[in-house]
Length: 412
Image (cartoon, rainbow, N blue to C red; front, side, top):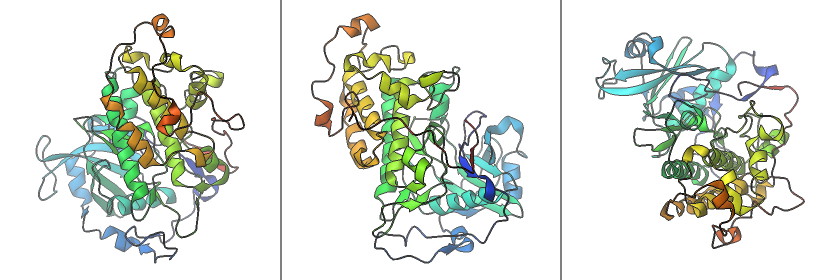
């Protein structure tokens, strides 16, 4: 459903089914995370009342949230999208009642537009998941409000906003190399937690705008409206309506609707390439093959000595060449067209956690860099990753542009 905070922006972008968009909402039930497992037993679904009775969440009054946000004042707007708007507010830390600005704790209040079946379904899914999942790298959901047509969610306030802002907005100070690696590690920890929990959760909408940063640049995954329970028993995938963001969604999922944890791995690979290059997943201001980041990145990795071609110029050459090549290799492995060849998230995390130990030095001018020897003393294969420079000739690392009939893309 979008970003919890940051400067006002478009914060959701996903594929929806036109045929179902105007249908009245059915009675919604969601399988409980605590009961879902991989034993093959199908658990009884949880009713909406059971989801909303989570002991970890506070049911808040609309009048309190209205006061907390000063009647949803425009100058408190943090972000907006198809789901509605997000506002900064203040609550008393103990009673969670409205407080004056600067008093109590700062929160982000997401207010959904009072229409549409899909909005309520995503809203309820987020309450369900964040009411039960707790991890340092998942944004904390404090409470919710459900009164008449008013549906709101209240999150912890993330002072630095979204990763998207820091990578792509010209007015924001560029992130240094060390911070980019830290963000990648934090996001990988969050995804690894979801994939390896007793009841697997597939995030399904990993993108730069859904990675939020606190005041210390700790990264947390936000927006669980599209999250889905992983396959159970002997199942290899979950069949779903195709939903996600163009440029981040795995090609096999777009083509078939078959969802697996490896779809999240693909999205994570795109985010790694964004961190390296400072370019968005899809850039419509570019032409031809330069529009799609995965395609563009592959064309720049024909020679590992020329890794600088891929790197964000805003880094000013301040990054370790070995670390950059490892990150690029890992990113291209994650976006492999063959999902079976992609690493698991715990493998991705293991590799990322080794990168901060590499010394960051200036790599000099582009001409100097072309004459340098290989920056990696070990081959990418020694990192248990396929080389992005010599892919299997029968495979393409490019995502399929095909989108099923009857769907449309909202946003970029």
